[in-house]
Length: 197
Image (cartoon, rainbow, N blue to C red; front, side):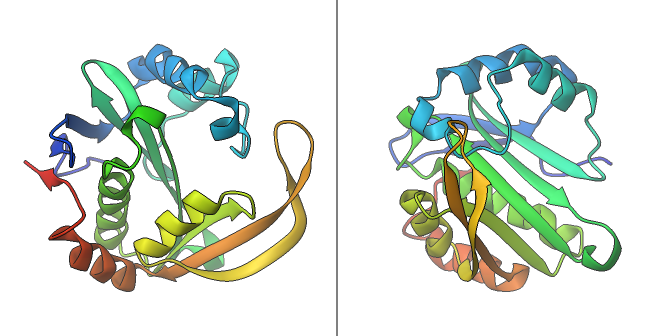
């Protein structure tokens, strides 16, 4: 699957320019370095142990944009953000799931919103109707960020996931229709989102 509109050069609110582009097989070492550079509390609730080379190796060797579209944010040759759109099949083929991680130094500058906008744009182009984001009850910042771009809490599954330390956590399912999320992002664009060149 060819992705149109990439790479995108994005100017963040502080003037920093970041390139958003699809992940390539040769991005493995940079992606591993990115995940290993994250503080433990930022990795605590990720679904997999992304500090293990074999995990990253599986990601890059298994690239299949028909099921998962991974986007990377690159600044000065280094990965500073990772965002993925996971497509479902069968009776949920109209639903996608998004996941995002942004380096601490690039948080609160609009990079997460820019990555989200790219993923939502892809979801629209693919004809998806609904998006899901899964966060734990302890990820208050992530929940607020998803709410800001139009997601709403739909369900809480008690003790549904274990963090990397083995502690059980409640899983919060946040969803909305793709068109509503896109409208929220468009409304934020004038005052909040970075500019895309």
